[in-house]
Image (cartoon, rainbow, N blue to C red; front, side):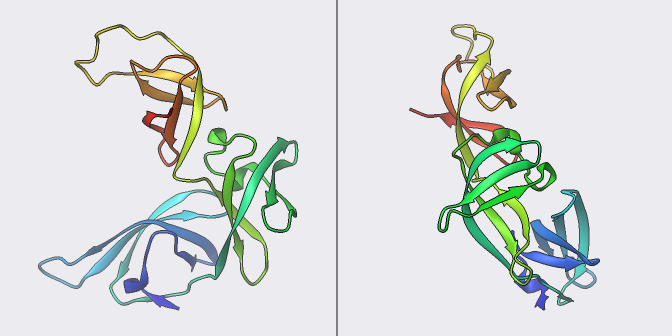
Length: 187
């Protein structure tokens, strides 16, 4: 059991008999009335995000989860196959349990959350940023840097993102996995 004072991003709650991970929270103390906590939680099984408000000090049931480093090997008809980097054991996760899968390439390091009591895999988490090569984009116009204009680009995994005009084909870029946004060029 944890109270709302213990909330943090990544905390896994047993809410409505399903596991949810807190993706965003905010403590609110209005001028009139009691304090409360606004949360955004993602259902681990379905991936659906819900908004919920908890009164301050309320006790909620937490779930014990373990994070284990894995490496993405390949995708086939059964799902995504990952290898544990410590004991080389392989785990297959269905596509619904792997958010942002189109930013993942073979050999990518990921973290898989396991339920501590049942040893069941829950979800795979990519790092906050990934480095990928642009495979296709329209050429940009020289000298057009006065505006913050973006253009579509396709990266080596097949994902489509928006990049600045100065990014050309075969350029390695860093992408933020949470919202598919361009961060910077990588040398």
